[in-house]
Length: 252
Image 1 (cartoon, rainbow, N blue to C red):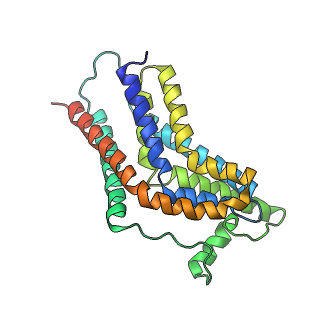
Image 2: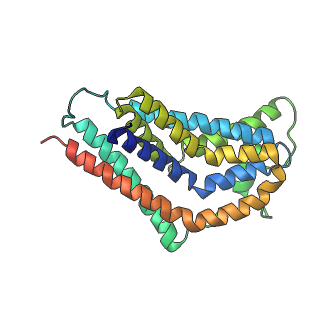
Image 3: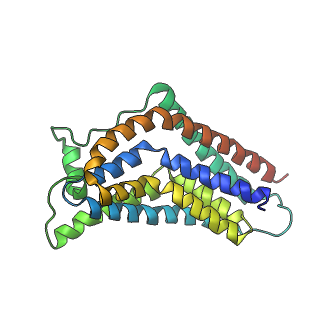
């Protein structure tokens, strides 16, 4: 039977994965890729692949910034206190941001299919052609087209300020867990939950890409209505918990 430490690590990793799922902009972006009329399957596949690599890099960074686990009772450590405090602060800041979105209303997401193109939008369409319905050409143009989908997926997971502190915390927790079996199980749990915003559009594009447009509108409204306060609650609770660990690890 798993002990309290194992259960705690599983709860932490699963909760962080749930917060990632509750980011409506990622889901809407993925559904927009799945609704692409030119190459929905290839776009979403590369979008998902980029996200997987980005998320693995973030978790690996969390492992790298954590000191090796020492046997016996934990001793006061400046490094441990600073890492726990920084992660706790990042979670509290993310929770406050999500709470602000819930209380005062989130900034409406730009309508990607709106008429009238601005200079910035034209530049982004040239830089990321997979976000448009223009047919891709062969050769270098095709490489650029599909590479842009991969880059969007990587940035949405690996460089997203709403995902970065969550992945760092998971990497930190996995590294401090002494049981290798628990580390593997928690990593699988986090990946299975956190990658849903990228895997779901891929599955949708493979099965019925035409439904992505309708689902994008409904899912975006639902997650904007309820996702912010749930994410704020989870981030706030674990942010306070991380700061309690930081205070306990503070030397002297």
